Length: 259
Image 1: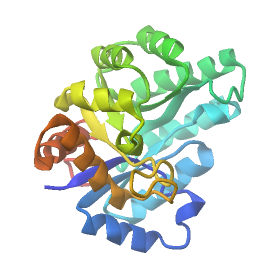
Image 2: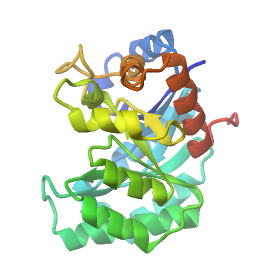
Image 3: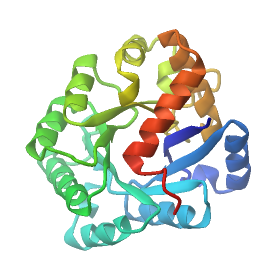
């Protein structure tokens, strides 16, 4: 039995000096597979490089809403080429972020819409970033249903109603370190009510370290604590949560086949 960190930014400079030690600690904590997530063209290339050179790592490639100007034909063509690689398991992270309002909303919607279409043409699942944009995210997701390969709402922070609608559209709900925070009442409700067969776990490292590491650099080894927190909230043995979320991740990202 082992854990899968479905969303890690090991391509972040925060890990440039000690990545081998970080990977070793992950294995010691039974985190045997890690998905390294791209959020622009540079980090997508870095994620692919890491996955090519580490048997425990996989990659996603995509353009985050903070980098909307990168969503141009040339880059979409390169992403399509990268998505063919066997260790590239999804498109992402993509989506909408209205908290920072970095770019005009219509431009952000265009970028999200074009990458949703790319995920379908590439026959790959996708990873959604959604911050303070629940209504528009749902509206755009509904435009292009169905999604035969599925998708994941990463580091989910919305309501149970939004989660249920995303699941109805074929999505998975991923919980991260904030589910361990004492003031995270909404996330505790989600951890209790999202069906196990639709639940994933992630660290989103180096961000959002769970208690008792809050405020420090996050890393995949801390995923075990997130699993334990979800198990406590649900009144389950942690093995049940580990088994379900690992099975879900392997199915969504096609990780059961050696590549």
